[in-house]
Length: 112
Image 1 (cartoon, helix red, strand yellow):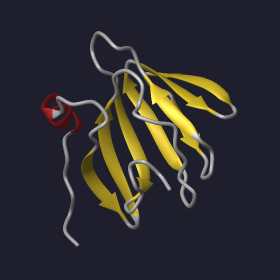
Image 2: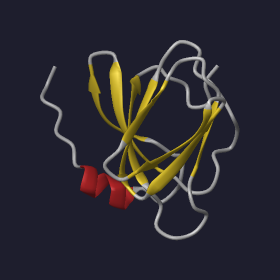
Image 3: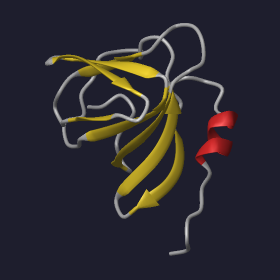
């Protein structure tokens, strides 16, 4: 395998659509993805076989879950455990929050 070099700054400037993750790199069986958030995600969902890790780089995101809401701000992260229904939500207006997502490479966008 070759060395994987990526730029968070360059990639975030290229993302124009919310909830459209861009794969930055793979680490063993895991993907590091960059995604922007705006408004509420299209539906509540769960990933039955894998956890998801979100690290907020800018802005603020409300991770709505069956265990309650978790407000995550820039410089903070959250791990959503497998099987927990969740639905991220960010402001409808203004600059879209930017987040790193670390998850298994085969994780499906809408779970299940």
